[in-house]
Image 1 (cartoon, rainbow, N blue to C red):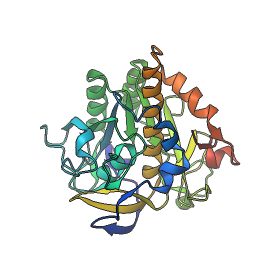
Image 2 (cartoon, one colour):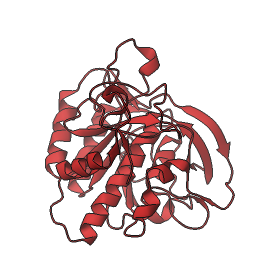
Image 3 (cartoon, rainbow, N blue to C red):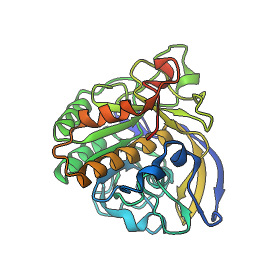
Image 4 (cartoon, one colour):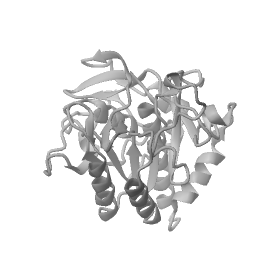
Length: 300
């Protein structure tokens, strides 16, 4: 999503194809490229809380329902966080699509998902809703927040609440933006992704691990992840292939969930956001210019 004058909206993205069903069960190329299935031998994200700030989620989707543990609708001030747009459902499936024999499998297929609905059926919302959602995440001891929104100008209140949540132990993962073709500047990354001291900023690459032409560039980039032609869940029990940095970020959010779950299983106490960053960078494969790929392509 993108923030303009106090309002938020989804980054423009590409819809390639919508499917009523997929044959059997699919582990999409992005999940395989980051080697998530290797980690599944140890953990699948059990016990880790991930919040998706987006358009909500299809709570009845068979690939998502087992992992959805709660949420809130900050637009209407109620517990109906159903997705009437589609973006949030797709992002959620990348993170935590269930390994149930049908559909798609996410990066962390047993992690707990909390859908924080901050965007409406048009993919639009308010920065104030985002701030409230982050406060909710702190109060409810969420460990990972996936953010796919941005603004060309910083918002002091938003930065402050992210700082507070980071100090509370929350790991933030943010899409860099899809603005590379809209500017001659080599720094087209939007806020909050530009706050690379607070969030893990994610660029998009294709199945050949080449930078997506739309993926925003700049020195604030932290990692690159699959974000082109990504198959995931869609409302009304459907599936869709989408492209955007909004699709790259949840690959990293899922990876963070696996890292935290593995640490929990090994009884490693007090894992901080800075510790998670070190693990991510250690597993990053350098690809080229930092402005294009950050520290590189993440792979377990």
